[in-house]
Amino acid sequence: MGVVTVRNIAIGQGIPKICIPIVAPAREGILKEAKSLLSLPCDLVEWRCDWYEDIFAEGTGRILADLREILGDKPILCTFRTKEEGGARNASPAQYHSLICQMIEEAASDLVDLELFSLSGSLKQLTALAREKGVKTIVSSHDFSRTPSREEMLNRLLQMEEGGADIAKLAVMPERPEDVLELLSVTCQFSDGAGHIPLITMSMGELGCVSRLCGRIFGSAVTFGSAGCASAPGQISAEELSRILQIL
Image (cartoon, rainbow, N blue to C red; front, side, top):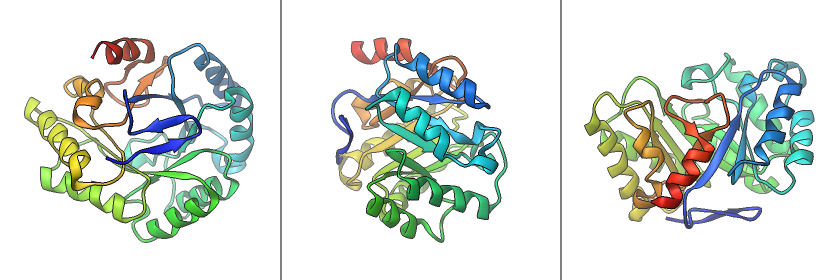
């Protein structure tokens, strides 16, 4: 598995990095959450801008500038999660593409999330643009209804790498314990040589919670913890997550 360095954080090396999402709907709440993260075990921060009520009117620039002032040198991941992949609001393909371009062109965040299936026709173009602007990309796929076959999960990760991702991300929903094992097996296979970039994987919900804790063993480089409101099923608090990761 490769290593991607973002500011002072080496993703893909050592203990999985803890990322805490900010999911407030208004500017005041977003900045309040950001300030609260300074006292928590947090390696990077994800601003889930799909939660922001003024995202289509204001875009991302103003909030990202505010977040940078508060968070200092802590890496910032900017994500608009579409409704189809578990996000907070709908976006047309044109709106989504426009927002992604804006995030990259402004170069105000360190990393940008690109959904594999929402940008299938322009993924390589956007990852190339991000590389030109010095922005790292996480290409992602979220399946809230099932755990695909091992072959399909591995294929998605390989598509992300082929599309120019710096980091690949796959989240799936288990229906039985064996589904969690399948996800962990694919994670191990990719990180052990099938892929050449860092990856983030998780099996969601209560059943898949263990996958958020054992990344160092199987190869997942980042895990998401909450600081109040969780952004996905199965997230646990960042403080608990940090204690467990240190023990493991």
